[in-house]
Image 1 (cartoon, rainbow, N blue to C red):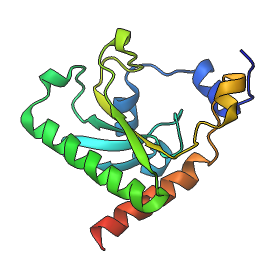
Image 2: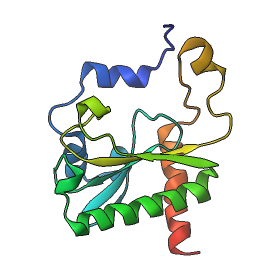
Image 3: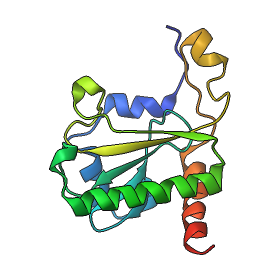
Image 4: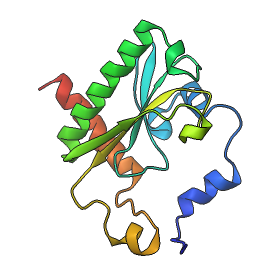
Length: 162
């Protein structure tokens, strides 16, 4: 496989962090730095620092828990409400043509963070898998994370104040 230089990735490789990334980000006060878009009582929405596509978001419970079936009804409802808001904000700010929405529960299912349940919301566009993944097994994300963060925050404001 060929490699595409991605300096942002080296920070993660050198220092993947200790503990749960979701819990660690929740402890910080600067939501722009942590890329947390919304935090409610039982759940929050955060951008993925290593996105599959522009605008890749994750909705996670506040409570550190690894299994969907161990969430209480209020947590499930709040996560779903945040997911709906995330989709509306992405529709407003980025105009995707579709979404991949999913949960990878457990390491064998592909969960990168096994101990803290979260839902992936990945916006998709026709042709967003250009030639790079096919010819060189490389995915290209074309927009800086903070630029995308600002767009999605604007989308959240718009859905609150139509």
